[in-house]
Length: 268
Ligand code: ADP
Ligand code: MG
Image (tube, rainbow, N blue to C red; front, top):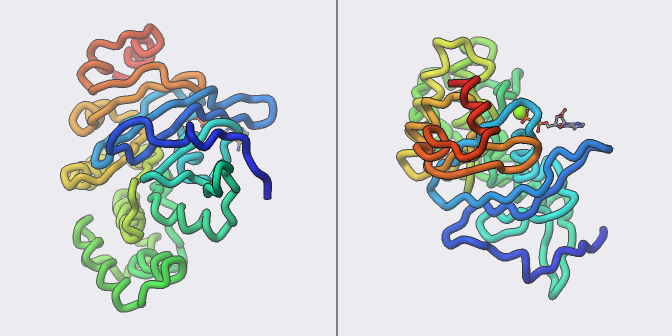
């Protein structure tokens, strides 16, 4: 275990009500610097949509927030806790794996390809982590799971296996599964990119419903209409940095940067 050189006094939230605080984050893979100093603040209850060309570092950013990737420089806070570290006096120490897992459990992640457990029923997909990671009683976990399936419109699919569901249904199960851990924030990495066009709407509707109830979310997507309708903040990333951010009407209709304009002209 190694100490890190982050000054603790710098590792404090920079915005009131901030749920996710990304501060000067750098990340390289070998010689390739993928994140080159990302700053991002997401307020509790808000929806942030991240746009940007392929390879701009969007997935890597989400993965660092969830500690699936460790940052090289900078820090990330979620609900006031430093991701991957604990404070001891004036120093930061890396968390042990089991504590990282505990942090990660409260940060929901919805992947492009659903990532459901194929050998488990829908209901068992939803209760697996609450029972094994959070030690919830099975009965209570099942009750929560049924309520969440109802919420995503799949109450009748509890006993089905993932392969028996459409892509849209599988993604709704994946969202319910993420919610079962009562996440402080939900991260979506292109949740509709793998879906046939006619199935995109049902998944976006579930995300919109979550937005209405004040779930804090960061959504990487190319669905500009969704961004316009649901986002509190739109963030445009390119080349491993946040190029610009603001309310949807500002970023989408009056982008200030040429790179944002060029990107939007291709996807709109
Ligand atoms: P985006 O999601 O915006 O398309 P990514 O964050 O997936 O971008 O990737 C940014 C860059 O980092 C790409 O060039 C990608 O090939 C590279 N990259 C991502 N993950 C890894 C990895 N684990 N090892 C090496 N290169 C990676
Ligand atoms: Mg990606």
